[in-house]
Length: 119
Image 1: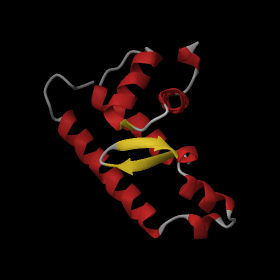
Image 2: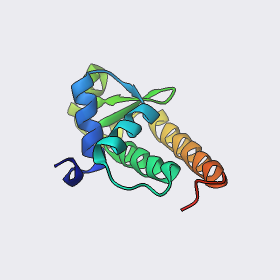
Image 3: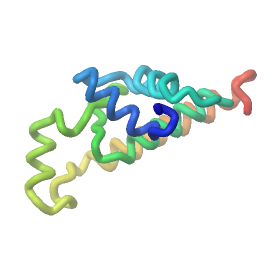
């Protein structure tokens, strides 16, 4: 049954079950283990799941690689319920997302260059 659930859904369920934020590598590793699909490149699989989490509005980056759920943050909840989404998103959110994406890309490129990790 877990094979039919998307990686991002599994990540959401894991965070809901634990009830606290998790370091992204720990969260993604657990997702990949539950998913049980064959992985040619761990770095590539991790970057795919990390990107999915980053793009899903149910997740929030808590800083220092930690991810949680928006529903846990009263400040974020009240901002989302106030109205216009463009006004409720903090200005630093986009720059944090861009920086995080760049870090993921750099990590992916670095790990792809490692022998034994090639597809």
